[in-house]
Length: 125
Image 1 (cartoon, rainbow, N blue to C red):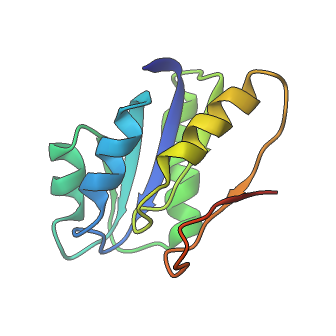
Image 2: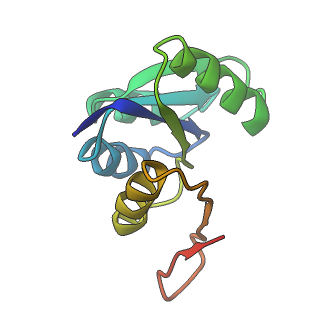
């Protein structure tokens, strides 16, 4: 498990998926931040139960605000890199492993995934 990298996950109304996203991410990274963006469901509680560090914005401020807040929290720890995920996207863990490998040979990597993509493929861009 990497301790020099972390993840930031903005989440709004993601009670059904956030636990799996956090648990899967924590298999690879020790430090996972979830910013609950004013959800009225149990998003924050599920993230906490799965082992994330949780911040809550109230009222809902939008994904950009949640990302900025999460990055500010994560950067206080001075990580080597920060992975930005989405609380509603059941992340494809093979892509996370690829990202971690690419990061440490000096490559800049961006992955684009879709929760509506039937094949489950992730493309590196």
